[in-house]
Length: 474
Image (cartoon, rainbow, N blue to C red):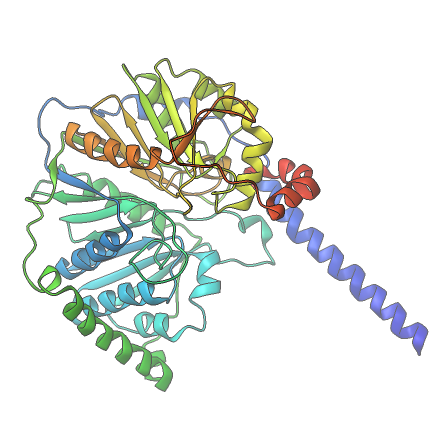
C-alpha cells in the first residue's frame, strides 16, 4: 500500500509540474517576440496633426491631487445624462471604490446607460463573488464588460492586459490618466497611497472634439472577441446579500452628497475651471491580445525627437530594450526623466531592474532624476517645449510598449503645458539628479537618499538573473 501511495504521489506531482510548465511556457512564449512598428503605423502617427494655431473645441485641466481626482469623477458621473463609460485596470470595493460604485449606481437609477470596462485579471480577484459589483451588474441599466478573462487552460492568452483608465460622460466630458479605481489613487482615506495624474477634458459642443477619438477607441476594443459580459443576470439582484449591497451603495451616495455639498448638488462651471486647448489627440496601442507593435512609444518618441527646446518625462519605472534606449538617444534637445528611486519604487521588479540597468539609461544621455518623496510616484506624463502636454497610462517599460493596451493624450496647449510642468516640477523638488550608477550631482537641500531595503537587496541578489530574462513582463 505504501509503495502504491508513493507511486500515485509521484504521478500526481509529475502531472502538476507538467501543467505548471505548460502554463508558464504557454503564457510567456507569445510575448517573447517584440514587433517593430510597421510603416503603416509610422505614417499614421507622422500624418497626425498634433499642433494647431487656433483654439479647438476642447478645454482641459490637469487633476493632480488624489482627493480632487475622486471628487471630479463623482462630478462627471453626476453630470451624465444618457451614457456613461468607466474603463479601469483595477477596480476594488474599498472606500474610494465604493464611492465610485455608488455614483455609478445612482446614475443608473436616474436612467443613464452605464458601461464598466475592466481588465480580466483583476476582475477575478476583486469583482468575482463581490456583492457590490453584483449589485451593479444585475441592474438593467448597467453592463460590466471584461477584457480577456483569465483562463489557465489557455495560458497563451493570459498576459495580454487592458491598462486603459478613463471615464466618459455623454459626448461632453471625460477624464483620462493613470489612476486605478480604488483608494491607493483616489480620495483621502487612510491607508497606502500612490501619487498619480489625470486630465479632465470638456467638449464645448463640437463634433471635432477628441472625445469621439476616445469613444471610437472604446467601441473598437470592446468589440474584441476576448471581451465578455460580467454576470448580467437581473435575478442576481434578488439575492438578499446583493440587495443589501445595493441599499448600502445608495445610502453611501446620499452621504457623499452631504459630504461634498454644493460641489455635487449644484451646477458646475466646466468652462470656468478649464483651459483653452488648440488640439488634442489620442495615442493608443493595438487592442489585440498578443505582442503589440510599440505604437504609443513610437508616437511619444516621434514628438520628442521633433522638440525644439526641451523634453520632460515622468514615469514610475524605466524598463527598456535596445530599441527604446536608442529612441531616447535620438532626442536632440535636453531631456530629463524623473522616476522613483529604487527604494521609493512601489514596484519591486521595477526597482530591481532599474538598479541592474541604470548604466544603460545613463548612456542614453538623458538627465535622470530619482524621486525620493516617501510615497511611490505613479504619474505618467511628458511635456515638450512650452506647448505640448501628455498624460495617460503608459509606463516607460517594455510591458507598456509591447504587451498592454495603453493610452496617452497629447494636448497642444500652452496653458496645460504650463500647468503640467508646474506640477512635475513640484515633484522634482524631492528628486536627486543622477551623476553615475552610485553618485548624485545634486540632492535637494534637506533631503537624504534612502538606503535600499534588505528585501530589495536580497531579491536582486537571489533572483536578479531570472528577472533580467523576464523583464519584459514587469
